Length: 114
Length: 108
Image (cartoon, rainbow over all chains, first blue to last red; front, side, top):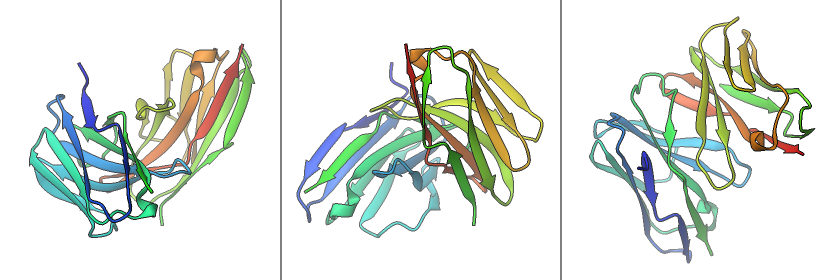
């Protein structure tokens, strides 16, 4: 039974398109995150939600819009995709938002923009 | 600005050949230092949390230590299944900042 699951695992799309990635966690955690891992393998936080409320919003283009319909789900919608958006996007969850330490990650969604 | 630097970038070991990975950091308001393991095509998997200088944690062949400026991950008598990328991260003000990782390959 997967703790943090993301769909789809792979996305290949053209520049200018819009795409969404969905994430669900069954751990009962209050906090969920989106991280981006680029080609150099750096993992960088994009957004964090605590019980459906946005608490971290890093310097991310407005084309990226997260949505949390409930505390078990966090989706990421990306408008007008650009080549530089190609990366692996990881969803994660944790129990304690205040120090963001022990995170449980999904398997990632690899986005390729052509 | 907070920084996390890991070295070496890559490490190739023979099975049984012990070694150490380094994570040096500069951060204001450190809440904890974390080690994760990432296998190819997978998400990072939590290994350890260290909170204060002098603290040590162990799990099987892995041992993590912390000083005021850096952390070490010691791999004792590694096996091929220890091959992975090891990521260090620091927590500051609710955000986890990751280093670039050390890719470890253990050959039989």
